[in-house]
Image 1 (cartoon, rainbow over the protein chains, first blue to last red):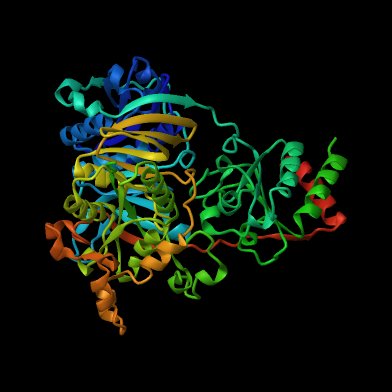
Image 2 (spheres, rainbow over the protein chains, first blue to last red):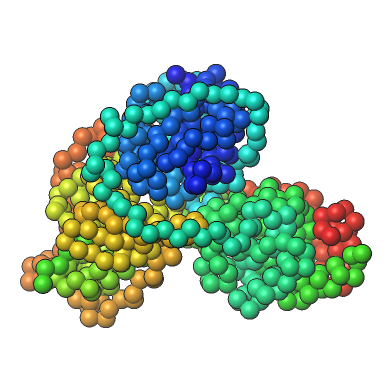
Length: 339
Length: 291
């Protein structure tokens, strides 16, 4: 079976964006290897999931619907997924690089003795020759990810083990409906044959789901500060500029670690990936773990005291100067020039 | 009062967080020599959780387990300076090239030798790989429950552990039966600093191979004070299937490594002068980037 399986994260009957992004990518990969796209939905009250996922080109939807399967706990979901993979033998299996996917996928990979690559930024199909024994492999999944703090990009393959498993962060792949009228078939999983009571030993006592306050992912304009902003106080210039331009404020990992801005604003390999129309980098040197999260911005302006800052090489405009001088001028001349 | 047996998994990692210009060599490869080896940050968060459990439950013990080369014993000493009781260094050339699956297999074998324990606790992920896989995979190999993304171990009883988790959009409180493996998120409290008395006490704690390499006579010191010997386990000490170790036991293979070079494109260089910024803002408005 040449299938590509995608584990779908579901909350209140809504399929997470990251899962829909993976279905979109999964369909392309399935087409390339001449196989089907299959989705996995595990939870409670999943009647309408088919209608949501089929338009992304899902051929088969595997459903395990039981009150005890929501909210997510590791062992029941991991056992169901592992048993499904043993029976269906997928070529490729994709999970979101979220607190669910990164909890679940390694457990499944360990059960199946499979290779798993975390936080991929690109997935491609290609051939491979193992250097050791010159054995040739056709149509492997290239799992491409930053490593070593983002200073290198590694292409990982799993020549022998199946499925080839990978996690991908939200916002890395594009979400795109294939065909509104696309119809797949639903297969129900008999969990009674898989799970026993002790599998539910971990209990969720309490959950506060807080919608994230900031939405830097969806912002058309992002004003992002790095360690070079210098202080939490100086970050107020960034907030002012973002407000005037109708954008959001982000921070590099160094700025977040230094306490200049909240963790939820972090942009880069370990934070959010953004693709705004305009990205204004303030006091950001441009370490690759940061640029991995913003390199697809349509336009980049870099404000830095160091004209040789690495980020300047990917910027469309560089302004050499201090944040507290440049930003007020930008606000002033924006107001002057806008109608 | 009866305490709990806690195992902390820690990793020595190159400090990849604030990589400067000199971190890349002229040929484009990473210059590991200039990156200091540090205690993986989230493992320090995990150590603090363990120390806090020990504070609240007198009689508890903390054993630090690390896998790596000889110098990785540094993280065991560092943990001892802050309140850990002892440690095990898992070290052997046979482990070289381990991916997360082979690593978790090796660590799980060491943990089997340390059974019974109440809690295994480690950082969510290490900054050199950022995979977050080893914790869950060790739990699977031991067949025990796992709780990831922990921010606070709220309470430990004889049968259960209550844990607060930090998720993308909120928090979750779970109870898990013991033994349990917990991975700790960076939002958890920072680790306490070194304790002066403990630092003096464990300053000369060494592994057997460090003793061999040393010219000084630590052996007699260690005989008098056995707590100064850091356990060191090689493949001979673990009941391992050789095909599951190191490169052989690693299903993921690195096909290619590309050193990241920022791509150059045409850049307009401006100064902070009024004229330059006036022109820029006008241009951005005219081409509908802003406004």
